[in-house]
Image 1 (cartoon, helix red, strand yellow):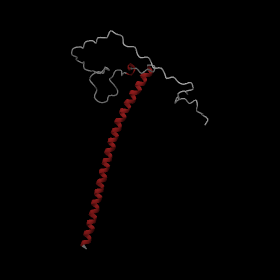
Image 2 (image 1 turned 60 degrees about the vertical axis):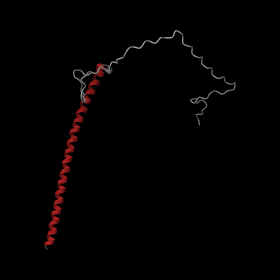
Image 3 (image 1 turned 90 degrees about the horizontal axis):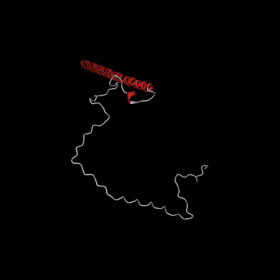
Image 4 (image 1 turned 120 degrees about the vertical axis):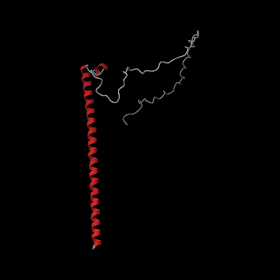
Length: 153
């Protein structure tokens, strides 16, 4: 009888171990789901805040445009009293003048001016005459001419 009892106890302990492992896996899954939900909720809150700022900014710009008679000029759209509502990333420390700062070229000695010839340039050749057509020649067919097409077909 001892062998049957041993097998029974071994089977029970194996089933208990499997049940514990399943409970641990379920708990781990639930923790991961809760963490993912928290991260998603925080990300959506951040996106919502940015979208609200953007909507407020666009409303303000539209109000300025309407108060200026519908004209969207730089002065109308310029932010008044603050740098900007929408700031993404690091701001440049230099003011944007609208010009690209290219380096000043350093040239050697200037080249002498070219001497213009004293004679007049030759006259352009006369335009060639169109070829003569015969008395009964047909007119040149135009691809866009649909006058001979019957539209009732």
